[in-house]
Amino acid sequence: MVEQGDEPGASSKPRNERPFLYPWNRRLRHLHGISLRNLHVTAPIPRSRAKTITDDDAPYSLASPSKRALQNDSKPLTQSRSFTDLHSALDEPSNPAALHKAATSYEKHEIQSDRPGGGRLRRSSTLHWASASPRARQSKLEDILVSRLADSWVSVHCPGVPEPVYITEVIESSMNPSFAFFDLDSSGIHVSRSDECTIRVWARSANTEEYCLLVELDLNLRSLQFIGRSLENFHHPLPQNCILLHLSDGIYTSFTDLPADPHPVVDDVVDHRNGTSKPGSSFDALMQLANLDDCIQDAVKVRSQIENDINKILSEANVLSAEDEANPGLADDSPQTRAALAAEQKRLRQLKKRRDELKDSLDHRRQALTTGRDMMSKSMQLLESRTQACQDLEAQLQQTQKESRGQIRRICETLLTIFPIEPLKSRTLQFTICGIFLPNSVYDDTNRDEIAAALGFTAQLVHQLALYLSAPLPYPVEPYGSTSFISDPISLGLSQRRYPLHPTSVPYKFEYGVFLLNKDIEFLMSRAGLRILDIRHTLPNLKYLLYVLTAGTGELPARKAGGIKGLIGGRTSQDLSRRASNESLQSTSTPLMQETLKAEAINGGIAGTKEKEMPVSLVSKSSAKDL
Image (cartoon, rainbow, N blue to C red; front, side, top):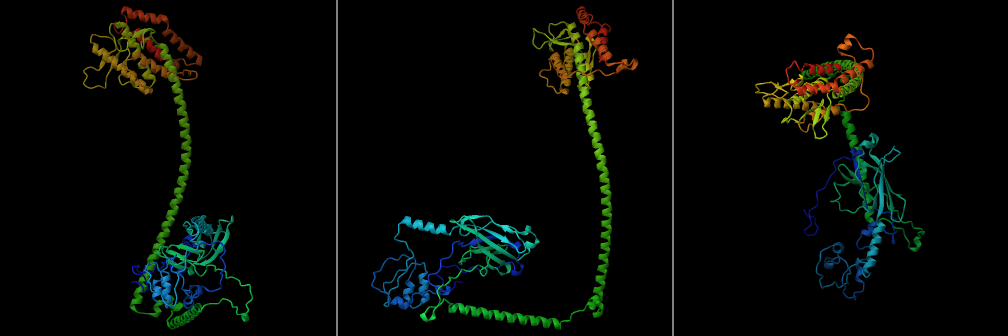
């Protein structure tokens, strides 16, 4: 519905918004933000003329129509320098309301040529420095703007708390600062449930360096005035230094608690005989005060009447005494009352029974918790003892591993001494074992007896390494000197499981046996964490494996007592076992022994029967026993 007197095309009046919280329910926990509007730091300029606000609002208090009619009408018509329209005012010059509406209208109408005979109305100019240069106008606008801007921050205080409850951030160079939202729920019950607070606004202008207390406002949240959900629909002017409180249900302010503008003090003595007078209230203000007084008196009468009515109702009502409440059956003996009493007594018995059950359950749970704590303490003690034992075992295991690595290093050094693997200077990646040359899986145009002897030493060395490294070979080796064999228990579809490691009349069996021996060497290298480059290099791979196993720092560990010699005669000293081991190594690696083996290989004794190879195998076995 469009109100009377609105312009055409104006939108309808928005629906009135109401707050969700009642005044008596507002607390500081509902306060989430603070904003300032029309910030004014400088002192207000005293009025040049003493008059009331209602006199300023009167449109024609200074210039009456009679005065305007007596003005000179001889001036020519000039261009207007304002946005006001006097068309409607010219139609009805005697209507002050119409003239006021015409002075504030933004619509453009053509000015009629007919002028009222009594005089001519002239619109007031709104451009006070229209004739000034653009630079001067810009400078004056900047000075006006800078004089109004200020830096400000707000502190919230609660009665009974010496320190501020909340301090906002500083917003610089702003007339309408809006501070960040906050939450006072975590400030304590005394603060969050309070409905009174003190808000202090601190500000400083561009010309000052220190902040000053601009506004100190003691608020009671019950006396706040609701503005709306947001400021978009609020178009009424706000006073200077207006404080807006953002509560959970909307925006509030206090128009009554704001500090009033100081009235100018008249130093001159009023002399009624000379016609001077002090400014007083207008008739409208006095009528408003009279209406407010009548409303207050009516409210007091209504309150007293309501109190009398309530007291009368309470006096006439039948109030039960303490005895009647204790014995409700005495007041009413109806069956319904007895049934209700029996039902309540039954429900009371059930509740008591449930209470007893809960007490018993709590007692059992307390006992169970006590038992659980005792068991947990015992378990913790046992865990600590077992943890210490595990640490000791880990230390022993590490020490054992260290000693075993040292023993393996010593054994591999001994094996290298028994079965020396040396390279040929004239050929690359060609090695000899015990002075006998062994090709890398290519046996064309070579001496069969030397190949058989070299493969016999190699098989014996691989067998001993698997024994001392605790690594069962996937292809078991039968070291019988120059007539050694190797088995393949893994592969499927083979008619034969045992293959020779010496040249025979069937070449593929011999080559397959050498391949299985190379696979055993690859297996030992993988157990040591090594990667093989070429599986056909028998002696280079074996030499590389022994080089890695014998690598280490420090002295070699001593031999431990054991074996048949330790059981029969015992060992008196460590030097004796080392001396016996050195003697066995020297007897095995003497040049005479190597020359004997070489002579037997040349004369064909190694390639003979199994009985002729027994001395060589016995020598290798005796060396293994010494290890």
